[in-house]
Image 1 (spheres, rainbow, N blue to C red):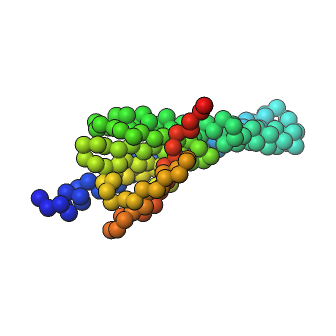
Image 2: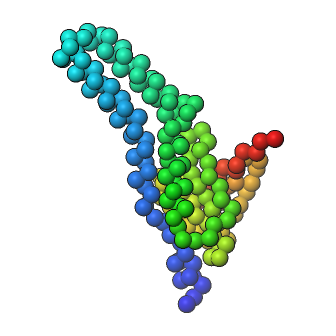
Image 3: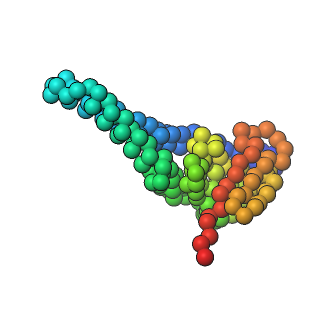
Length: 168
C-alpha cells in the first residue's frame, strides 16, 4: 500500500456530530412555550394582551441572557455532548483540549499511534475531522494554537484551538 493511499485512509470527515447544532434551538423552544402560555391566558382567562406581550418580552430577554449570557448554557450543553461522544471513541487520546469560550465551543485531541488529530468545533459546523498532524503548520500564542494546512485539498484549511486557562 502506498503512502498516499494510507494518508487518504486517515483523512476523514464525519457528519455524525452535526445534530449538535440543534442545541442552539433550545432557547427558542422555551420562548415558544411562553408565547403559547400567553395566548392561552389571553383566550381562556381574558388577560390583557398588552400585559402578556410585556411578560413574553421579559421572559425572552431572561432566556437569552441565561443561554447566551453569564451562564452560557448553550455552550455547556454542546460541550457535554461533544465530550460524551468523543469519550466513546476506541482510540488512545493525548493532548486533549476542550473549550467553551465566548461562543466558541470545541474539542481537539491527538491519536499518538496514528499521528493524527481529531477536531470538532463550531468552526467546522460540528463535523468531526481526522487528519495527520504532519499535514498542518502549527502556530501558537498564549491563548490559542493555530493550525494551517500545508498543501493539498481538504475542507479544513485553517482552524484554531483554545488552550486551557491557567489560574495562579
